[in-house]
Structure formats: structure tokens, C-alpha cells
Length: 118
Image 1: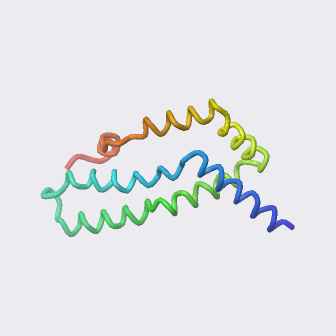
Image 2: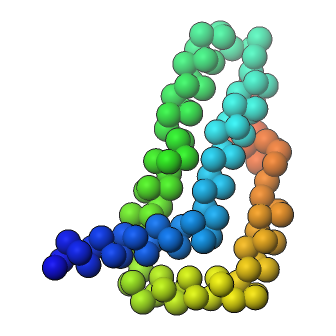
């Protein structure tokens, strides 16, 4: 019974992640790659390539989404997640989701700002 309840909470958390479009985490790998390009010619290319591969592995979108889903399932009750899903399906919930999508960062400026200069 506890496993079934846990599975249901996990499935609800997954639905909430999809509804919130948190899959947008996948843009991050491209942002990292673009930020690393600024170091080309300034840092040994082998080191740069190794660091980039490590960053890509560390920030794999599927792993990030799985981690966020598990955290949601632990922090929110099934009722809370269902209420959030219901709200996201309302007109205002959909408008906010669309607004969030339209302002998703597409430049590397925020990533570069946080990285040390070469």
C-alpha cells in the first residue's frame, strides 16, 4: 500500500513538472557550452573539452528533472500538487506558463556573469 501511494505521489509530481514546463532545463547545456567557448584559445583545449563534458554530464536535463520531481514529491502533498495542477489548467495559470516560456533566457549573459573571467 505504501509503495502504491509513493508511486502515485511520484506520478503526480512528474505531471506537475511537465505542466510547469520544467523540461526547459535542457536549455542549460547549450548555455554552458556557449559560455565555455569564450575560453577557447585562452585555456588548454583538452582541459576545456574535459570540463565541458563534465559539465554536460553534471547538468543532464533528464537527471535534473528526475531530481526536481523527487524533491517535489517529498516536499508537497499529493493534494497540494493536484491543486497546483488544477490551477495551472486555469486561464491565468496558462497565461503565466506562457509568459514564463517567453522570458526564458536565451543568452549566456547570466551564465557568463557567474563565471570567472579568463
